[in-house]
Length: 298
Ligand code: SF4
Image (tube, rainbow, N blue to C red; front, side):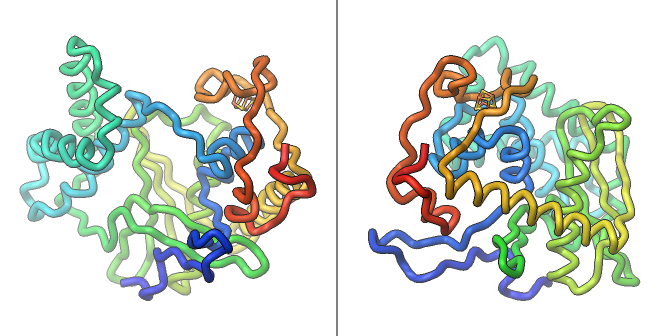
């Protein structure tokens, strides 16, 4: 087991408004948001604007929940049928937890196809791994470690396997398709981020990073080396420095790309003729621990 501190979110004393002030933190997703578009990072992390659930994202959450709980069944009984049988109960749990997800199934005509899609992703999983030959050390593991003079690095590791000799493998499930050749670096950044965190928590670097793409049945494996983890730490520090510079200046600039087509905030984006709302009072300081030059930022 990890030390008790791992995976917990530390808090500092309360701020003037009585709200618990979280230690500034960074996850791979939020780091990628900033790299994609600083304004998108602001909307998601500082303003915490709600985003409508997408059918693909909700299906991904459902499939992740099934794969997590599949390993509760005894080895030898982990079959595609067992996995599919978990879909209804995991869907009910998901709806109880996040009632808004039912929005993705508003059209009754889509429901059957949507669940069939989830079942097909699970079937693909069994073509890539035999879960009867695995006993994960951890599933859906919340990890966190503090970077000296930096943010707390946080994330959720889908699965952690530990071999009898102690070798660690970090596994992440993706319900989309694998990246084209030459475009793996974005996905690997997330895994290297987790490798850095896990290497600090377990006092040894992971031997293997494994991405399991259920969308097209591809497994990407990568052996990280110590130099690579040092490079990842420098990269994270550079991203964090960029975030703090934007926070202090209040300049959260939009960065247009093909990914804008999936952005839920186009109506508020100057690149699309919108006007961002004022940053909520104190939100930058509360989230990132720095005070913007002008009140509320821009
Ligand atoms: S629409 Fe594009 S440029 Fe605008 S906030 Fe979203 S990702 Fe950034």
